[in-house]
Amino acid sequence: MHISFIYLFCFSFIAVSARNAFIMDERFVCTVKRSCLECLKLSQCSWCPTENKCFSKTLTKSSDYCGNDTIRHVDYGFSFEENAECSCSKGEVDGNCYPPGVTEGPECSGRGTCVCGQCVCNPQPDPQYPTKVKSFFYYLIRLRTE
Image 1 (cartoon, rainbow, N blue to C red):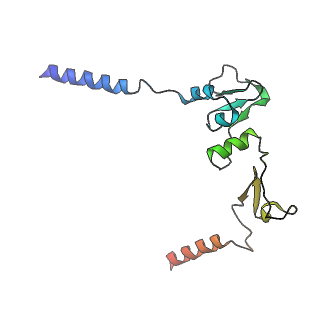
Image 2 (cartoon, one colour; image 1 turned 60 degrees about the vertical axis):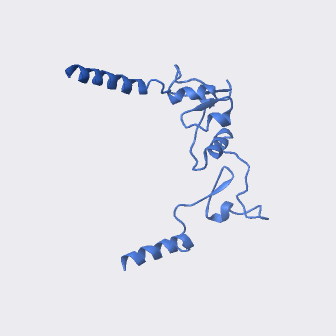
């Protein structure tokens, strides 16, 4: 009976340790990417335009690989594709941050900032002119407290 417990213990140990045998470090994935756009869809990767190579800063032997030319992944709050496009173009993506037919004046109608050709609303709107969304949330909170 004791031998069967020992056998069961050994088999369990082997099964658990073998389960993690094929885990790949995600930093190595960077080396197979061949374009800036594909590279910077991954947050752990950076792009070197002078070498046309995708790499991970934590894997390179030299911390100054690619020098100041390194383009890093930046999370602008968009999709992976849009973040990569924006990072690769260094934030200079053509877009329209003006209402249709308007070419001058404040971008995003003065209610936000233009980030990579897209309007991003200010997190705290002007208290004199609250947005409908903000007013709606105040209404919901008031209903809960009454």
